[in-house]
Amino acid sequence: MREALHFTFNNRSSEDMGVVIASPNGGLFQENFLPTRRLLETSIRGKDKRYFQGVETDPLSFSLTFFIEEWRDRDNLRQISRWLFQDYYKPLWFDTNPEHIYYAIIEGSSSLIHNGCKDGYIELNVRCNSPFSYSPIDEVTIQSSVGIYHFYNEGDLTIKPRARIKKTVSKGDIEIKNITSNQTFKLTDIQLDEEIYIDFENEEIVSSLQYLNVYRYGNHNGTWLEMIIDDESNGENTLELTGDFQLDLEYEFVYLAE
Image 1 (cartoon, rainbow, N blue to C red):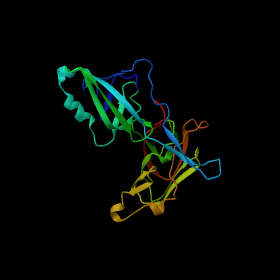
Image 2: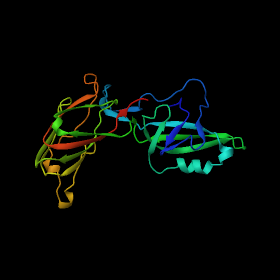
Image 3: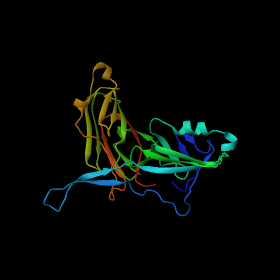
Image 4: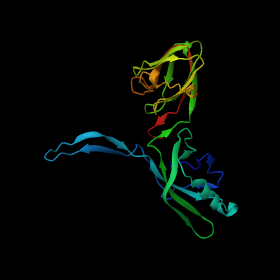
């Protein structure tokens, strides 16, 4: 990202705001390669070996410096500050790699360095809501009549998509098996034309019949689908669909490094 000249934050381009990314240090670019991680360990008195409990990964954080290229002509410093001063994470991407999106907020202190004649630059710190970047949200519609569907995870990590399922021919069961990960998601006794929203990551199920006090957790087998990625599958997930339904998958790929 350091080699970029422009960025887009909260769906507004820095080029439209008259600013351009600067590299005040010069020389080679230095940026994060892998997320910052900390080992969670427990030490016991009298034992040299620590007990490993897991890994904690920090959200991505980095500095951003940009030159106010058209400060004199635009006199838009307040407009720039309103653009950047957001109360929640907003999408951020750089012109050199717009397919990698960060969800970011400006944190900590910031500095305006200038000569008093409307020539200068701004330094601030960006913090993301996760250690990763993401692809633009995409979706695909699959008819269960295809039987087998190949989903390709083009990112670096396992993802858990969101889905909408609509029963299309008759009342009954639906089943989605990921042959690659050996997982089977199943719902039983679904009504004709009933639509069900599933958030696999947050383990949520919402039926279009919920206004009739129909809740589908009791019709679920307790398995939540993942789209894995490993060296053997190279991101290919083979889905086997059983039943009569339409499946709409919404997803975004997750990347470790730009």
